[in-house]
Amino acid sequence: SFTPNAFVDDCVKELQEKVGNDKVVLGLSGGVDSTVAAVLLNKAIGKNLYCIFVNNGLLRKNEFENVLHQYKDMGLNVKGVDASERFLAELTDVEDPETKRKIIGRVFVEVFDEEAHLLKDVSWLAQGTIYPDVIESVSVKGPSATIKSHHNVGGLPDFMKLKIVEPLRMLFKDEVRRVGATLGIDAELLGRHPFPGPGLSIRILGAITPEKVRILQEVDDIFIKGLKEHGLYDKVWQAGAILLPVNSVGVMGDERTYEKVVALRAVESTDGMTADWVHLPYDFLMKISNEIINKVKGVNRVVYDISSKPPATIEWE
Ligand code: XMP
Image 1 (cartoon, protein in one colour):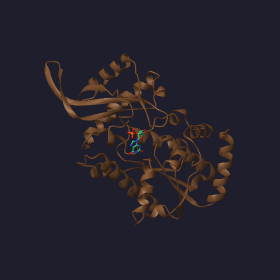
Image 2 (spheres, helix red, strand yellow):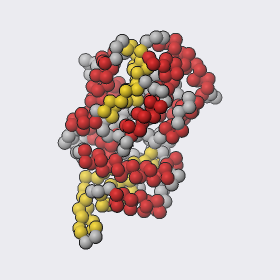
Image 3 (cartoon, protein in one colour):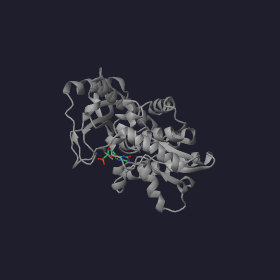
Image 4 (cartoon, helix red, strand yellow):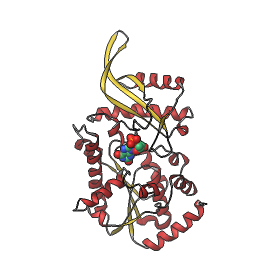
């Protein structure tokens, strides 16, 4: 059976032998896999690990600042790069979901390449690839997959000419979490719901604007905080909010309103391949709905998604 302590010891030794005194660059996403990979490498090679955490402007509310702070507290050698405006500018007027994904993947590669360039004499690229990513590489999505798919394009960014090191490539997700716990990584960070690489862009149906990002961040924050406060967060595999591209009529005081609709989504799943909607308590939904409509300007209606996967998907785009 898998013993996280032994894995950490062996892995640190192997990394030291493999990498020696070379410099390694790694992209942090705020997720479990890249974080555990970074902490392992940090343990093995310390300051020769250069981490880059890119803000694409589509993260959860305050996520960039909070997670960057957490990374620094963990002793990681990390640089936060706020490229929000660049991503949002490139996404202006883009409505098609796959085009959004492609743009975000491309801009991420560009930003990462520029940053990697600033580092002198780096010879390795570390990635938080885990075993399911290796065996299902066709269905893998996210920054690492984006990087791989660019391999075929020709004219590789410089950082992709680096040698690859993937310390978690033989591990399943639960094993990664156990390794993370052994390494002393905060339980809250290890218990985080999955979050898609393209972030809120695929939860804002249609064209993205800074104002829509702000609205969705507020709504999402109320929902996620509410789940945590009511002890529901850990019973849910993934949760989030979706900003719909329709307005609906409402009433506020004596005034007629005509504002945005948001959908809440919470699913149970083991791997994201199939999923059931979670039967969240009515009282909880009532409270969250009231809070969203009272606090978030521009939203006057909240609906709850009761579709399972298949035939629906988890994300709406
Ligand atoms: P779907 O919507 O396909 O989502 O049922 C299944 C899981 O994959 C996540 N997802 C993504 N993750 N890049 C990612 O890194 C993407 O483009 C992407 N699209 C979906 C989704 O959040 C869920 O966990």
